[in-house]
Every structure is written in C-alpha cells, then in structure tokens.
Image (cartoon, rainbow, N blue to C red; front, side, top):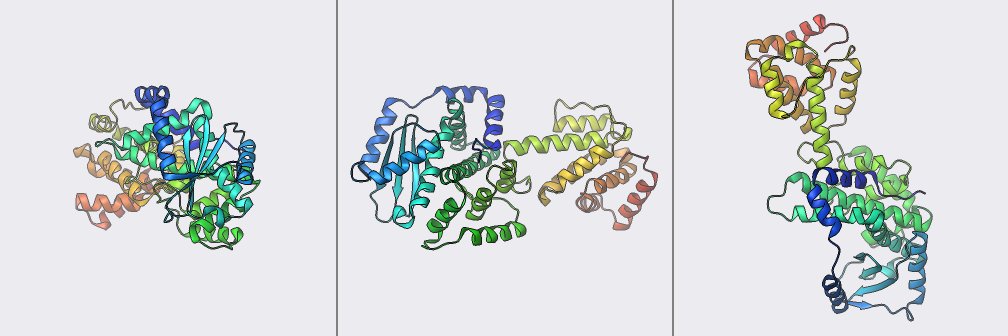
Length: 396
C-alpha cells in the first residue's frame, strides 16, 4: 500500500502558498523555540506518568517497530495521562525531532497487540505528515489554526481548517494500515475505542458503513475526526483512489459550507455557466458585462466554441453532484443574467429556461423566476417550449 500526503493536503498547501504568501512564509520560518519545548515538557511531566523503557520494554519495542515501518528515525517516549476519568484514547505531542505519544484511559487494556500496533501507526503518522517536505503540512495546519482564532475569520477558512484536520486523521489511519499490513486491525481498534466492546468484526462494520453511505452522502460532520463509518470506508479503499477521500469528507458541494477550494470551484463554475450562456449574443450586452464584473472584476467574454454541447454536458455532470442550496445559488445567478437587460427580459428568460434545463437546474430556476417575476407556470412552460423549438443546433 502506498503512503503519501492526501491530495487535499497538497491542494491546500498550494493554495496557501499562492494566496497567502506572507502568512505562509511566516509559518514556514517560525520553528518552535526552546522555551516552548521546555514548557511543553514540564506540562507533560506534571500531568502524565512517563512509561519507563526498562519496565515497558515490549511496548517500546512495538512502537519502535512501527516507527521503522513508517521510516521514522526519531526516539520515542510514551506517557500515560494521570486522570482516571480519561476516555480511552491516544495523541501525538508533536516535536520535530522526538516522538511523544500520550495515552489516556485504559486504551492499552482494550486493544490486542496488533491493534496496539495500529494505534501507534496512527499517532506516529501525524509526525510523518508534519515533517514531510520540510514541514509544509505542519505549517499549513498551524496557519489555518491561527486564522480560525482571529475574530474576523472568514467562514471558508474555518471550514478549510476543519476539513484539513479530518483529512489528517484519514492520513493517519492509512499509516495505521501500513503499520499493520492491512485495514482490519485499524478498523477493529477504532470500533473497540468507540463502542467499548471487546469483540468486534471489521467486515460486518464495513457492510454497515457502506449501507450508511448509500443512504447519506452529505459528508463528514465531525469537527476534529471524521465519523467512524467514513474512516472505515476510507481505510477499506486504502490509497487506490485517494481523490475519493475529499468527496467522503465534503459530500456534495454546499454553498452554505464552502472551504477555500470550494470557493474557487464555485467561482469557476459560475463563470463557465455565464460564458456558455453568453455564446448567445443577446447575453453579451453592456448590462450583462457590468453584472459579470460585479461578480468577477476581471471578467472578459471568451470566444464561444463551435459546438456548445460538450461544455453544457460538463456543466450538467458537475452540477448533478451539487447540494440543493448550491443549485439554488446558481439559479439566482442565471436569473440575474436573464434580467440584466430590462428591455429584453421576456425573450432572454425563455433561452435561460432552456439552458437551465440542459444543465440540470430547471426546477430551481423556473420556480425562482416565477416567484420573482410574478409569472404563471403556464407562462414559463410556453417560453421554454418556444426556446426548445427555436434553439440553433449546438447552442443553448
């Protein structure tokens, strides 16, 4: 099984480098200082019990074996939280040159040796990710965390930081699978921790996870970790189709919950939609250009292609996977274009109804147009039929 940062990690790093160069440079250059390390170590000593190598040699040998499998050469120290009320869990306390794993609750007692291997594989994979490519993925995590703590943080950064964390957990799950040579132990360890059961069946739960995802493709709702069924499905897929991970986490593109990449995609789709509609010269009046530059200040009309069926089909395929809220937003954008030239609203409305039908958002557009323009359903049906009958071959 191959093992590398997920496409989402790479795309977010590329985005931040391009659009936040100042912040990116700062977080890439700002390494932990000695004071931070001393304070963190003191906090660990006060709140945990450090497991000595001599008295826990088998556990250290297991962790060292996992580190070797993941090609990590740092020394490791294992701590156990002192609170007896702690839930069973584990976490990596990140230093660049040392592996520090903090256990909490009865985590070791719940898991067999192979599942403990999965546990260490998951935690040590956080270190592997954060030290890749000179720490770029850790810099991105810190930059996004800093952004969401600002009082005026844009919602897209908040959503991006959430998804970045979720993808990081999926990456760490893959590390657990690499450490164990398969997905069964990571899945069973997840199930034991989440359910408290001592006997679980990964294959049974994968069937359950698939049933959930057949019924609900809304994406992950978790803040720090994806839901267990999403993690199990991702583990079962391994790295065979890493581009599917983003869809598992995001679900259908929802205009009410956009991250930075979604913003770019929705902007591009909105521009493409206008460009295809603008192949009809009636949609290229001064009023339409003014409107589009309100959306996109640098907007310019492109020369229309000879055959519009391909871009129309591409738009239809993309919009088919969008959430209803996003289709409604695009319907509003089309209505703006249809009514930008007040002297030509009626003839342009028919053409826009036909175009909306071709790209799969007719119902959203038709109902919006009727409500805003106070039309009857028979009116819009007649306009649509006339546009169908008179549409040039290959044009909307």
